[in-house]
Length: 125
Image 1 (cartoon, rainbow, N blue to C red):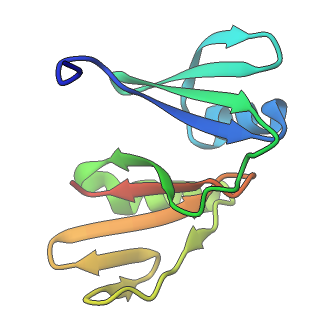
Image 2: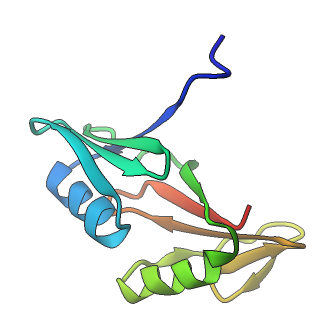
Image 3: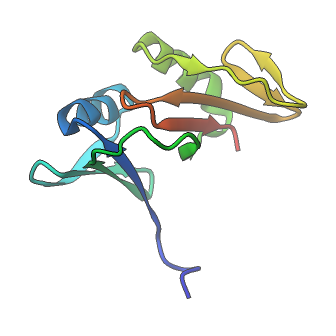
């Protein structure tokens, strides 16, 4: 039923202007639509990301969005780090931490948070 329909990620933020600045300027996403002071829609590849105002922003303690960035992962991590993004380091079984990358065989993953604490992820898949 939904297998051939596009999905959209939703990210809650406490301050829409701060959230918009992070997703637009730090991550480089393009704004495609705004709905007053409540929602900003961004384009990310062929998908959309809704960033919306919510008092519950940052309460999710699991990964909210993952970007598959392929072999560019090291370059993207470096570029985000240069913009002030701090990467998270987790103690995960079977994982080696190399700089800010969690390495599991061929798989490389990096986690970081937006200004509200939403967990975002890059993976070389």
